[in-house]
Each structure stands twice: as C-alpha cells, then as structure tokens.
Image (cartoon, rainbow, N blue to C red; front, side, top):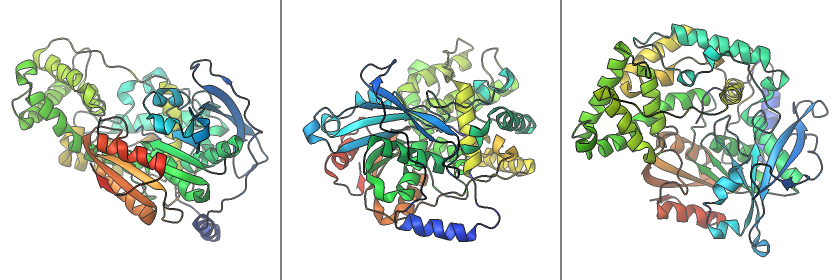
Length: 481
C-alpha cells in the first residue's frame, strides 16, 4: 500500500444530507450522475496485445455532472468460454496511485481456468493515473526521491525536515495539480467504477480488489450494493472512517512487527551463509544495530533510513528474503549492497497518493501532534523507527476532505475477504475490522502465511481454492488455512 492521501469528515451544515445519504446507501440507492459515454470503442492495447483497451468519459466533479469531464482508460480480456460467462470481474489496483490497465494480462496469467471461463477481466487506470486523465504535482527533484516516499524521521527522531517536506509537497500539489487534484478520493473512485459498469452494459459486476483496492471495493459495495455480484477483498485495510489512510500508515508499525519474524527465522536458519545471527532474536538485534550504525556513519550508497525502507519494502514478499539478507550482510561486512529498485513514475504516484489520502479524511494539523506520536512509536515499535506515526502532506492540505463512507452490513451477502496472518502493510488486525464492519455480508479466508497479497500469491491451496470456489460457484464461509 502507498500512503500519501487523505480523506475527510463532513463540516458545516450537512446533517440532513448525511442522514439522507445513509438511508440511500441502506437500500442500495445512490445519487444520480450523468451517464458515462456510450459503449466503449475497443481496440488492441498498444502495450498488451492479449487485451483490448478503450476510454470512457466521466464527470470531473460528480456534484456537477454536466460540467467538465475526464477520461478513464479501461481494458478487457474476454471470457475464454462465452457459454459459461457469468459477467465481468473488475480488477481494482492498490496504492492509491497504482495503475491497473495491464492487470487483466498480468493477473490473467495466474487465474484458474474456471475463473477465466466465467468472467471478462476488466482493468482500469484510476482517475489521475497512467493512461487516464493524469495529475502531476510537478515536485522538485529534492522532493521526489525514493528515500522520502515513506516519512522516516531523522536519526534522533526529529521531524523538522519531514514537516518542511510535507508542507512543500502539499503546496506543490495544490498549486500545480489543477482542478483534478480536488476530485480524487475513494468515494469518487467508487462512482467511477459504477460508470465503468454502466459503460460495459452490466447490471452487476464482480470485483477483486487488493491492498488499497480493498477499501475502494468496500466503498463501492457500500455505495452501490445492488450492483455488486461477487466481491473479493484481498489484503484488507482498516475501514475506520475517522482515520482511514492515517490509520493505514500507523498500521505499518504493527505489520512490520507481525512480519519481521518470518525474515529473522529465514536468516537464522542460514547463519552460515549470511552471518546475521543463529536465532531470530539475534537477527533482529543485528538489524537494529546495523540501522543505528548507518545513522551514525552513513555509507555513500545507503543511509540508516534507506536501509530501513529497503527492509520494510522487502517484507512484502518472501521471495525478497535472500536479497534482504545480502543487504544486511553487505552492511555488516562493509561489502557491496545489492541495488534496490526505485518505484517507477514517482511523480504521478505521489500526486494521486497524496490527493486520495488528503481528500479522504481530515488529518491533525499540529506538527507537535506528530512529533509526540513519533516518539511513542519509536519506543513501542523500534523496527519502524517512528515512520508510521510521522507527518504527511495532509497536515497542510488546503482543501476540505470528503465525507467518508462508513462500511456497513447493508446489502447482499456477497463479500469474501482473504488475508494473510502476517502482512506488513495491511495487518490482520485491520482485516478483522473490515470483516466486522461488513457483518453478515462478509466471510473471511485467513491464510497462515506472511507477505502482502494472499490469493494466488503464497502457494496456499486451501486459501486459493476457497477464493476460486467463491468466484466460480458463489460458495463461501469463514475459513482458516
């Protein structure tokens, strides 16, 4: 999950409107908007010949449906067996800020034949990203480095530099992002999803959302319950409407503690290769000691916070463990450190991530609030050194956030959550809150595994088969694998 977005609570005299909205959601009614453009004109995608691509037009501002419009890029791979077709399966990307146009090809290579037989796979670039109408904060080079993507405090815990960076990013996005910057949020993405459904001519759609896409999928299922078929939410965010993205960032501290023991056990079992310690506890101490040594004396190619960021990002997938062990080994011995990939399209990713986080929920405005929170987090969760509690551009966001959508049980019983027990980015404790919010509507497949992403990622047949059975036959129940 990417953090850099905010969303909000209502202000002023909106109580009557809120009550009407809650009542409408409860019965599956949503506010009318201008219809999407006529049926998409499909053509072979320039970058993925296996799939078709098209664009549709949607309102820039759903409160002004007849006003300016923007484009959404969508893609499709048709069902492999038309006579078994059930409908469409929308693949909702994470982030926020990740693109999704290539997902029918990327994920279609892994989906079971029984699923491919029954669904057209639909991908899309959410508003502001990729081939959809893009947004850009025009950040300066000093503010777009990968080291600043997560808000690591200084070695002594000071957040003065973080606060200055957050202010610069907020001002750049507000000043350079144009009107679209104010109209990127999760409820708006849900409305965009419904416009995709309309453009496809579908009465209902099924969906598979991952990471941040679980919250987007949950909001869609809450705002438009009557238009949902089978909903899969994979690696779930905590839907607490008072915190949202701020809570997700905070949860990195919990997720890091949940997941690090998997890496520590891996390295301890290979102490003769990496020399990081013969027990998981010794590996943990080695990591903390090396991070502190880099704080005191950074290498030309690696700082303490760069080291921490590499470690945290590497916990997302067990296949990264050998590389992580080599990084620790290189720092310990003074030898070379493997090159770490830099996320692509950081300008666009930061712009959409920031807009979503800051438009979704109100964030505290006091720098001291974050300084105090960082100090507590550094004490309670030393692995992440206070980063998950730190200040973000949303503390300086000049625009009023939207009214958050509270996830509720109102709607059909058609939501399946799938969740790893040891997810560094979206921890199990947050998934339990998503499960509770949906109530009777949902069931959850709990997978005894680590990493970010559960369905078709971990090689866990029990979990994979449970999700496949739901998509194919609609059968589901709470399951532990």
